[in-house]
Length: 247
Ligand code: HPA
Image 1 (cartoon, helix red, strand yellow):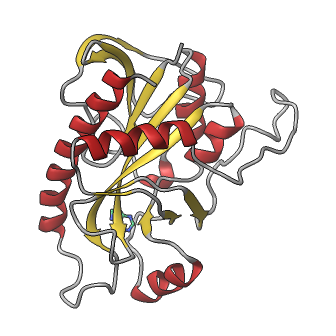
Image 2 (cartoon, rainbow, N blue to C red):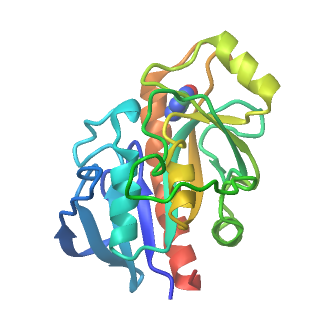
């Protein structure tokens, strides 16, 4: 049976609608995850919630211990991960206040501990990452979004940048030429670490701004806050619908 975890990103340090059962502090050989694991239920379905940036949103994207987060989830028996992420929209169809379920990712990050391989505790092997996201979870997210009539783009290429600064207009132009349709800072190495441990993993991205250089007025942080709130509302409904349908 699937054991589901939700990794909350920016704006999602707790999961609205989650009935709390207990908090669990896990320590892995890679250190502690960003936050305690919250065991609870949404619509009577058991889930585990992990706040990627910490309980008080204090851990920036490049400082997240991605290995500890994914390892901790695996150690408590998680099989399926839904990763929530606030992103910037690069392509026109990825409009503010819409959701994107990416099917591809390009990694522009650096200096992050990005693999479980290379230390003595894991036998070295390559993993297939042709399709970086779980087709099964993606389909459930898409079906649920359609049922709820949420504005959703059902494919997309997530460009993962280093942060914590936002990108330059030229960087976004280059990413667009590369094929990226959304940009965020936490998609990698989270997705590939999940693959290395055999977890089913998919991302539900909330577009909270147009990417750098895409609007003449520039990035408006107060608007991002507003869009984040509406994104969290959408995602809360979406997750409840996915869980009721079952994974
Ligand atoms: N760039 C990178 N990460 C982000 C953005 C962005 O424009 N918006 C939200 N997360």
